[in-house]
Image (cartoon, rainbow, N blue to C red):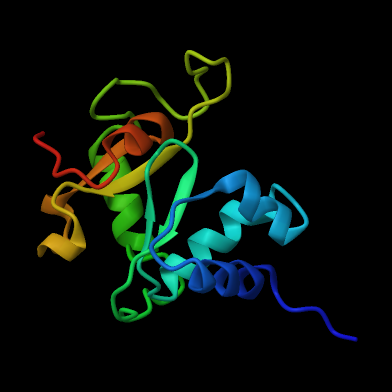
Length: 148
């Protein structure tokens, strides 16, 4: 018997509990593996499902129509991504850390390219609207409009 993909198991559960906040731990139990739950949730978001995260470890499926898929989840073309990383000197534009340098938690920093004005707020995927952020600053900034 063939098993359903983890994202299908999580989506089915979220649809059954539409609008309810569900802990990521519970979703991990459904996925049979804690590491698979965040990946499955990212994939569902990329597929256009209106998922919301309270940034405290809880997720919910909002009761609204499914949006358009985001393609493969990499909305910024590789060439443009490299152009922005080079323009910004390979450093986070908020905290100044470089790739591989230790963060406060001791883990090496990863650099990401972030939309200053999010795409769903009308922000274009152009160099002028992109900036380099470390993974910590990008996570902290989240979906807010950047001021720099």
